[in-house]
Image 1 (cartoon, one colour):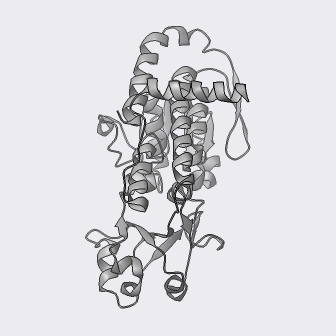
Image 2: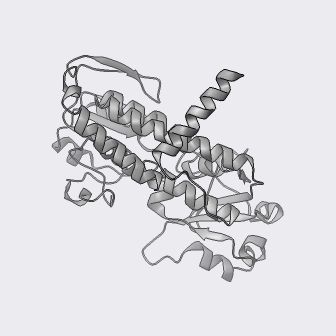
Length: 328
């Protein structure tokens, strides 16, 4: 059974068993520090929540919180197309957002940090998260805390922690590839570093990013610019692309093979250039990050990522590790 299915089962069980009990303390105030270092105080459980990106919206649904609106184009989970929308995470429509009358807005630091002042004029509470792979369990717990959904969030985050531990163990035994991440087009490329969501996952799986060490340069944090001469010199083992351009723009792996410079790279010649799903690897670092990790692992090592089959096996292994630690 895949981790995503296990997480959904855990959330459903907790929602049914603990749903009534969780309502008792919803009038308590809470103060939580967000990604910008702001102390955010909530006087009680919010009733009208929105997430400013697909990833945040997916995390809300995963812990049993249904938002009152969403950014455009979200396809997961089912039923998202029935929610009113307020633009995209990159270009939110603040008027449409205000019409939803949210009492809690959860924003993405990489995209909406400059908009916090405007968002605070719309909702009484604005909470900001960073969205990289290693932060997902902590973010799930934070969202659970600020929405009074602690139990379901903790259960899901614990599963993710166990998954990331397996990722770390698997990567420690492998000789990872050197990689290049490109978002955009070959004409207007942005080279992702390890501080991006995709770059963070790649490094956690043992890869070395040839763009690391360069200063940020581009429309979003975590991206830089590289000369083609530098790329040819580094000759990365694997190239990961997310093509974003005008409608009809061909995927970058196709244009690379036709370009006299790019086609000189070993990765292009050996067919190790991979076009990745925009939602899964760029816009939605949330509950489906386990699926994203599995896909990258297969790309890097030409084999499937071996996961434990069920929760019982996971619990038994954790108990054995605790016993071994106690014996030492």
